[in-house]
Image (cartoon, rainbow, N blue to C red; front, side):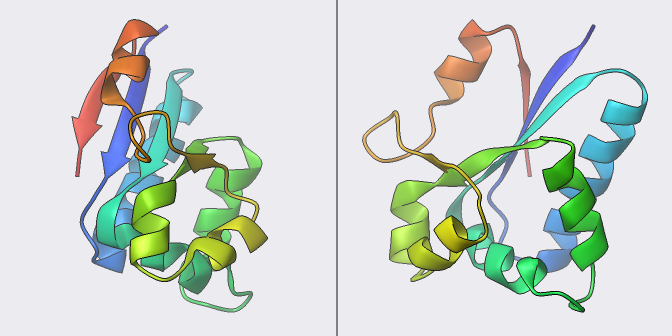
Length: 115
């Protein structure tokens, strides 16, 4: 089985939507896909978590399937959405000086893709 970690950095919501779509597609093919939310895209979490928001259902489906590994704790704080990310139930990742470690995913045999 392929294991893919999709690290999303780009702050544009539509770019993040494509990360969600790809993770869902990979999951449907039996691959293990995990999304790591980094940088400016952390601001998309509270936006997408709002019921009725565009792409809310897509975000919720990825979350329900366990595809969202978590969001960067340092970036969530810097972008002013730390409490919103926590309220959305997204785990905070901070194992590399406050940021998610790419090496941790590589050590677990994930291929890493960045967006």
